[in-house]
Each structure stands twice: as C-alpha cells, then as structure tokens.
Image 1 (spheres, helix red, strand yellow):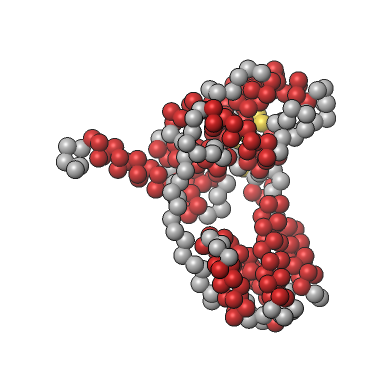
Image 2: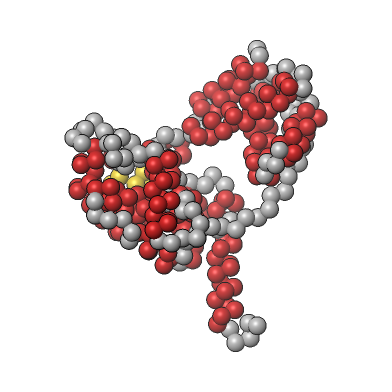
Amino acid sequence: MDNAGYRQKFIDYLRDEKKMAKNSLEAYGRDVGEFMTFAEGRGNDNVDRLTGTEVVAYLHSLKSMGRSSSTVNRKLASVRAFYNYLMREGVVGSNPATNIKSPKIEKKTVDYLEVADMEKLLATPDDSFKGKRDRAILEVMYATGMRVSEIIETDVIDVNLRMGFITCGISNMAKARIVPLGRPARKALVDYIDNGRDALIKGNSEMEALFVNVNGERITRQGIWKMLREYGTKVGLDRKLTPNIIRNSFAVHMLQNGADLKSLQEMMGHEDISATQVYLSATKNRIKDVYDKSHPRAK
C-alpha cells in the first residue's frame, strides 16, 4: 500500500472507531499528509520504513519555518498517533515518534472580556431581524461557551427552551453534551425564533439550522467572525473580537463566580481537564489585583 493509502486508512479508523469530529479528522489528515510530503521530498517514499531521525528532521523544518511550539506539538502528536495506528495494524514494529520530546510551550495569557464589556456587547444588536439573530447568537455563545463550529451546526431541534438547555456537539455523538441556558439567552432565542428566524428563512419550512444568514441559509463560520468583528468595533474594543474571546469570557467569568473546574470542563467539552485549568491563571491575576488594591500592606 502506498503512503496515501495508509493515510486514508488512518482517517477511516479515526472516524469509524474513534468517532472523531470532522474538524479533528481534517487536522489529523492534514498533519500526516504534510509529514508524508516532507519525507517524500527527502527521498523516503515508504512511511513503514521511516525512523526517528526523519521525524526530528521534520520538526526542525517546522521550527525553521517559524511554526509555533503549539503547532509543532500538534503535528508531532498527529504523527505519533498515525504510527500507533500502523503498529496496531502490524504495518510497523515500532513508533519512530515515541521518544521524541515535544517542544516546550510558553504559557499564553487568556484573552477575555470583562463583565462590563460583555454586557455592552450583548446590548449592541438592534431589533431588526438580523439584530435579533445576532443578539441570540451572542447570548448563546456567552451563556454556554460553545465553540463556533457547534453554534453553526446547531439545529432548532437541539434547543429545549422549556427546560432551558441546548445540546451541542451533535456531529460527534460520542462527545455530544447538554449545556444549560440562562434566562437572558432563552429570552433572546425566543425573540429570534418567534420574530426573526421565519423572516430570514423566507418560508423555507425544511430549514433545520437554528441560526441562518440573510439569505436564509445556515450561517457560516466566516459569517459569525464578520459579525463579531463588526460588534467589537461598535463597542470600541482595542482588539478584534473572536469567538474564542467570548468562549474564554464564559469560562473565566464562571470560575470567578465560583464554578468548579470539573463542571466547567464538562460544559466546555474538554477531554482533558488541563485544557480547562488554563483559565485559572486569569482568576489568579484578578485575585492578585484585588489584593493589591485592598490590603493595607499589599505594597
């Protein structure tokens, strides 16, 4: 079997047995494909014969191109997972990426909005059909911490307004989760569904998507990014507003108000709690600021 065949078998395995989401499948496929292209460029056409030296050379090439440590780590993890699969299938006897150390990642600060800025943002949309939709999107994003991909794929049937929750991650049923909806988010959704969505879908009763664009089609990732950029400018933010900033704001504000890490992990859909722990840095900084301002012997 050629390299492309091994790669496709790997993707099929991740999709069918690991039930991996579409975005993750694309990332793994892309990473493994780039590694194969690199190896083939050096005259190594058979992935079942590559050694750790080839993997190290690949990582060095990524660093020389200016790729960040987190990107290099992700690509190394993809190659490692690929060879674990080949070992499972009996194609190779060992994993050439097993003993290669991942580069250290510098800790990044969490970019989020203060509560006051978040309130300004939520109050910005007008009462037009599009404005009702935008307010509902913003309220749901902030109320749930949902990823932009999850917002896009949500259908009307996934929302239970009577009970006050939304089911997200439906594209990967093994990892789907139910997240509560606060009263403001429920109110915004009711207003959008009753007084905005019908006008936007233009009578298309077969449209399942919860959030649609002005053409009555399922809203896209680009559409949400553009919407957030416009509202971020309107409220005078000093940087571009992104879906991740709102997701971060949800997490930080939850922790600041007493949420426990385990519950937050479940609501955000993190497989590893270490991904949730990064938000603790923001709460620690806030506590330090309060201490510095309040304690008579802080300085």
